Length: 619
Image (cartoon, rainbow, N blue to C red):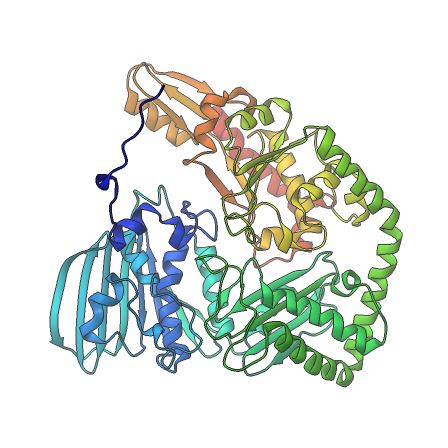
C-alpha cells in the first residue's frame, strides 16, 4: 500500500502577482509560442501595451503612436495624457489597479481587467515605463516584475504621453522572433478601427481614412469584388460588405472595442443572421442562408459597455448585452443592418441586381452539388469510423467548452511511415494526424465539386470542419508535414493550392504552417545536435570537434518516434504560410500551378541552381 502524502499548513502557499503570472502565463496571454503564429504570446505582450495607447486616442488624447522593434527590444511611445505621475509604479505592478475601473474615464475601452501591462512586466527580463505630463516626468524599471530602479520626479520639456520599453523573457518565450508581417497586420487593424490615428512602426506609417472600407479594400482585390464595397456606420457600429467573384467560403473580420475577435462570438453570429434576414425581406424570397452568404467578404466592429470575452486573450465575444441602456447585441445589430442595408440596396439598384444574380448562381450550384454532398458526407462519416486516415486528438476546445483551443494542431502527413512516427510522438491531447495517400490532386481552376468527389479532399474538409465557415474550424493550427525533398515540396504546393482555391481564409487568418524538421543529426558520445540547415551542420561539427557521426535525414519516416518528439514538442519549428500582399490569389495560383510560362521556367531554374549548389556542398 502506498504511503499517504501529508497535507498540512506547510502545503498552502500564496503567490504574489508576478509569481502567479510567470507560473501560469497561459491564463493571461494564451499560448506562448516562438512568434511563428499571430496569436503567440510575444504579440499579445505588444497588444497589451498598445491597447492602453489606443484607449488614449479613443478618449481624444494623442493622434500618433510610435513603435520600434529591434531584435528582442520593443518600444511603444504614445502622446496621450500620460499615467498620473504618482501612480507609474502601481499601474504596472499592482493587480486591480488602473484607470479602466472608472467607467467615466474609459467607457468602452479595449483593456478591461487592469492585468495587461502587469503581465508584460512580469514576463519581461527588462521593462521600463516612463510618463510625461504637466511638464514633469517619472519612470521606473523592472526585471521579471521586480522593481530595480525608480527615477525621481523631474522637470522636462518632452511632449506628454507614455513610453514603454520591454524585452520578453527568453526563458518563457523560447527561440522567439517578432515577424513583421504579423505586427503589420495588427497595426493595420488598429488604424482601420480608429480612422485618423497614425501609427509609425520602424519608420513605416500606417493610417486609414475610411475605416472598415479600407480593410476590405486591402483584403479583396478590386477585380475580384462582385460590387463596390457597402460601407455602413452608426454610433457604436460599423459594417463593410462585398462578395467575391471567385471565393467559395464566407470570410468575416470582426471586432469589439478595437479588439480583433478572431474566433467571432455573439456579434459575428448576429451579423451573419441579420444579413440573411435583411436580404430575404428585401427580395421577398426565402433564399437559403448558405446561398446568401456564399463568397461574402465582410467586416463588423461594435462598441460594448464592459464586454465579456470567453478567454483572457479576448478572441471571442460572449456578451449578449450592449450596455448603457441599449438592447441586446443581437437586436442592436439586426435593427442596424435591417435599416441601413435595406436602404442601401433600394438606393443602389446595380448592386442589388449583382447580389441577386450571385445568390441565384449559388443556389444552382448548391442544387447541382446536393447529391454529391450527401454521398460525400456519408463517406466522410463512414471513413472517420472505419479507417485510420485521421488520428484525432482529445481536446479541440478550451476549458470553457466554447472557443477553439489555441494549441490544437492537425498534422497533414504523407505516407504511413511519416504519419506513424508523428502519431507515436505526438501529444494525444492536442495534436491530431491526417495521413495522405499519395499526392493530392492539382485543384487549380477546379470547381468546389472536386472537393466532394475527391476522397482525400472530402475527408480533409470533414476533418477540419470548414465546409461552411472558418468559425467552426476544429484545429487552430494546420501543419503540413512532408519530406524535405522534391516530392515533399510538390505535395506542400498542392495542399497550399487546395487551401488557396477553396479556403483562402485559412491562410489569411494565419492557421496554415509548414513543419520544419532537421536535415542532419551530428553527434558524438557525449552530445547530439540536430541541424536544420547546412550552416547549422557546419557549426555543430566545429562545436563537437573531432570526427562526429553525421546522419542526413532523407525523409520523416527515417526519424524515430523517440527523436521526433523533440521536433513537434516545445521546440517545434513552424514556418507560417503567408500571402504576398502585392499579388492576388489568382495571380499566385496562375503562376505556380497554371500552364507553363517562361517566367515560371526561369523561376524554377534559378531555384534549382541554388538547390544543386547546396547538394554539391554536402557532397
